[in-house]
Amino acid sequence: MEKSMLEILKIFFCTPLLLYACYSDIKKRSVTNNVWLIMLAGSIFSIAYESLKYGIYSLYPLFISAGFIFLLTYIPYQIGAIGGADAKSLIVLSIIFPAYPAFQVFGYALPLNKPLYDIFALSILGNSALLTIVVPIGLVAYNIAKTGWRVDNPAYIFMGYKTKISKLAGKHIRLVQAFEVVDGRVRSHFKWGGVEINEEKIRELKALSEKGLINDEVWVTPGLPFMISITLGFFMAAFYGDLMFVLIKFLL
Image (tube, rainbow, N blue to C red):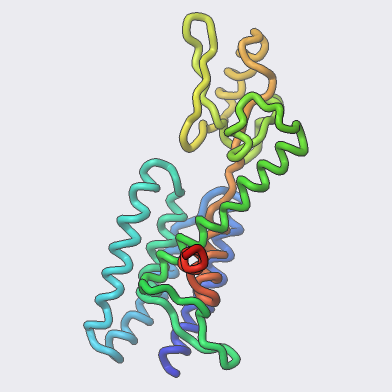
């Protein structure tokens, strides 16, 4: 019962901080490090309690969980696949929850579908990735509704939409393509992670458009905050379990 209550308290402790991180990520596309420092400070109490209650060997899962998640998020962070706040949130959660939380609510043993492995933050990451699938599905639906199937780059309908150059300013979006002028002609290519849009880039695009080298519409990708997916993935993992594990069991 004590262990179950501790897990519930840790979930309650993380909830407002994760929700604030989502709010900050939506408004500013950044999250202050103070959020993760507060969570780390709070984790000290649970770590100290568990080590005193169950012995120093109870800390082994913490090192495995934190080390594994650090290695797993480092490369995606370096190539720009996830943001710094996203990586930090997963690392901090791997420390607070070194193993899958097991608790009871109204007589139900949660989570309902615990996977075979016991790295909770890995399930959060997997759940987050699956939840982001709704984004390309929504973009496809939007693009088809707007222009039909007649698009110049069909693959781009899964990752963005077209907008006028004059409407680029002040939005949390990035260019899907990078443009460069070679021998008086413009060449474009897909840019992994997108191209940052600033005043200089907008002036450059307008100049190319005025010369007739590119259209007045460009493909952009929305800078959707992954922190929302991580937070939803956290609650899904805590109360339901690992979506990826459930999906694999269903397919097999």
